Length: 111
Image (cartoon, rainbow, N blue to C red; front, side, top):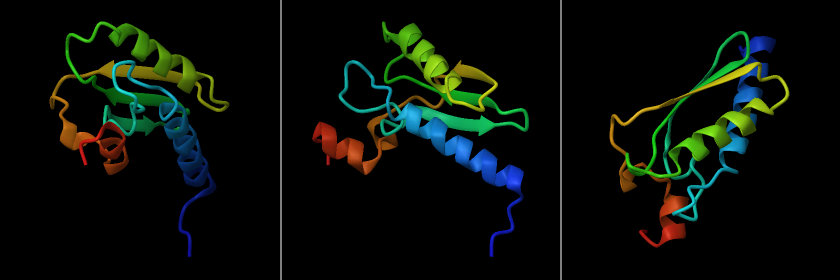
């Protein structure tokens, strides 16, 4: 039996839509989306439907960092129901290949 309130169900569905959008954003240097790469460290949606995303990049000196962050803000912000998007770029813990999903590892030939 499902003990979730309608609000919790709606929040979970909204979170899935955000994840779908994140899977549409690719690191230009690696042919894998940022979600499967393990670049998303945290994703929370509050009661006001504001999305808070903590993410990293594969390298601190990534020249396309502003473009990737902007793409996350734009694509997630375009989801019906999302009221605001806040993206925080973090470097701790540093990203490494172990954060990739098995599917991503297969895609780049690591697994």
